[in-house]
Image (cartoon, rainbow, N blue to C red; front, top):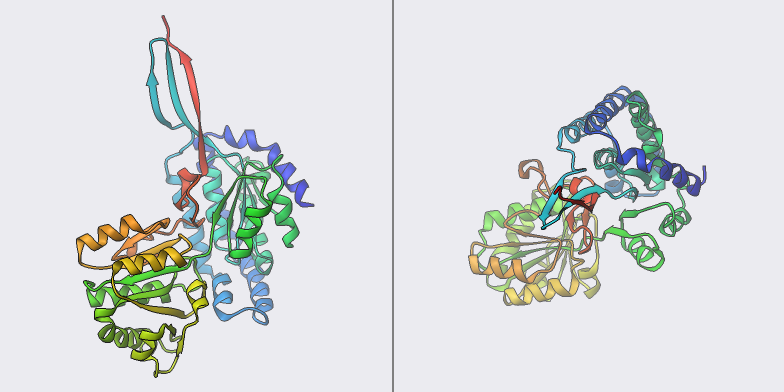
Amino acid sequence: MTTLEILENAKRVKTSLALMSSEQKTAALINMAEALEEDVESILRANNADLNAMRSTLSDINVEKAALSAELIHAMAENLRAVAKLPDPIGKALNETVGDWYVSCKVAVPLGVAAFVYENKPSVTTDIAALSLKSGNVCVLKCGSEVYSSVRAIIVALRKGLKKAGVSLNAVNLIEDTSEESVLTMLSANDYLDVLIARGGKNLGLACREYAKVPCIFMGAGICHVYVDEFADEKTALDILEKSKCVDPAEGNAAEVCIVHKSIAHDFLPKLYARLVNEKYPTPVNFKLDEPSLGIIGELDGCDAATEDDFDKEFLNYTLAVKIVDNIKEAVAHIAAHSTGHTDCIVTENEENAKYFMRAVDSAAVCVNVATVSAEDDESVLDSGIGISTQKMHARGPVKLQDLTSYKYIITRCKA
């Protein structure tokens, strides 16, 4: 089907999705989880075909990001079940005003038909479908062409669950046209879409800003910083930088820049090198060093002089730019000049510096002594499944269930 035909089908079921009861949503999500587990082998076959094709053109990190396993698919099914247990946000009274003759109630409602454009990470598919269904939205998915077979196999399984629960298959849709032209079609499809949620790189962001007639929520590039303050606990700083850079370097909230206070740089940088290079075999981190830091560890393997452009790059690999600053205000100024407003962190034991950093840094997520990326022992505090919005309207930061709702006012006359 063409992109417009898929959007037309999605719009047809908009009202029925909005009217689903909490019990219907729960049943559908549980059936979707069961169907996903039943289709593990077919999903893995499709994923293997995608991965084999990707290996000749993409980096190992991107191939790894796209890889599925039986364990991961079972975890995706468990996520569906976890969303099923969440409170239904639709119909929730957000506030109420009682006048002399009326009652005005602000009530949560679905966004409507929501399109999602995302990159080569097929495991995100179930998170999007689950949160969309739970919030009463019809979802239309546009994945990266490299993982189309994987995502299609996942959607086939999810639709089996929808059918078993008596829910329209058009509640979850996949765009068949994997070209960039289909994204442009979606961006101008304001007759069909209520919102488009995009997670991707710079080019996707530019397309959204230039061509969108549909309201957009954009998960932009993540040039994320970790500032190691003069009052930082050394072990905490090393742990946070290792986690922020190495847990998942291809994620948008992975650290790309380390900023270090000059008073600790001579002692700290060699220890950082030892942690991220000597102890990270076979995937050591490469350093891009400003002039002062080049003078400290520049002679070591994997250390190169940074260009000014290196502080405006989302590396998405095992590369880390390093800058030394005189004080916290210079660190904040550097972040303001180079940050994409995604996630930035300070490591410090000084309460006043922490407060200043939290107030001065204008990013969607500001961390104090917490890694920029989520990890198991962090309880996935910054992991939303859908992504982290770098905008200020309608959603900012981790996009979760409540962010896939809007609201309307119900005004009723009081009885005499």
